[in-house]
Amino acid sequence: MDDKIKIEKPKEGEEVVEEKKNTSSGKVKPLLIVFCVLLLLSIIIGFGLHFLRYNFRGNYQRCNINRRVVCNTPVTEGKEVTDTEIESENVVVETMNKGWALMNVPDIKLSVEIPYHEVVTHNFQGTQLESVWTYLYRKTNEYPYKSFGTFEASLHFSFDPLDVKDIVCGGSGCANMSSITINGYKKSGNETLAILVENFKREVNPNGDDVTIDGEYTSRWGLPVYEYSMDAPGGRSNGYILINSEFVYHISYFINTQPASAATTANKILNSIKFY
Image 1 (cartoon, rainbow, N blue to C red):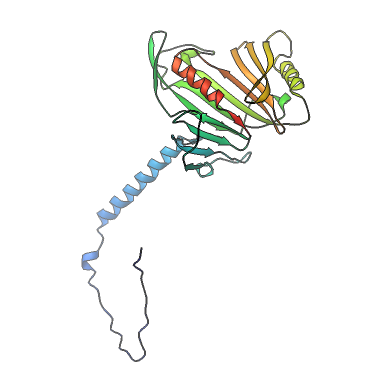
Image 2 (cartoon, rainbow, N blue to C red):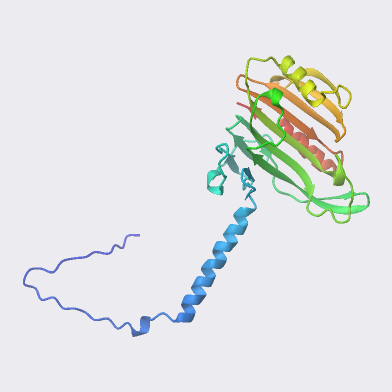
């Protein structure tokens, strides 16, 4: 604004004339004050409810994401997360998948692309459902694999129904759900990928007869990986184990074949992962 308020002192010897203003017409009515206060409270509550959707349960948080957002999620271990700590800026970013957003996670030095929030209508056991992909970043893990090192952070992607209605089921694939979890661990030593894989097998199957793991050493994302399928009492899952100079990454996933569009999206999410 170009208009500024200036205060000038009267010159010496100049008579100062006090101008009296008629304030009778400027009195604020009590009802107007009450109305303004109520309006302000409703705005504050509205914003609070909006941000609550993306920040809940302490170290669990969701990033407010649109088609062109870079979302950084640096969070200190043990510190309660607030939305102000989710840095985001509206910029044009280059992505493999047109219209998707790019999420950078400096805590574990990776990035991944995520699709635009879209409701997918599908059928499960004769019941029509509406599901969406959701994205969760967290700094805590109740059941980390100790064989991988010190848990740092994880990203969880899930395709879940907005309302399960009257469906009763359990295990992998219930209500056509799919999920991808990326856990990052700080390396505790100089273990090779082969040693980490063997330690992982012993940790998940200490008795040698409860879990079956079939896998092979291959490459993906430009790095050597161990790709496996695991049958356990809780169901079947697939995953990758890989390392770089600083971190051990454990990527586990279950991709349902239906609906086909969700399965395609899940594979695109996996393909878009980059480590740096």
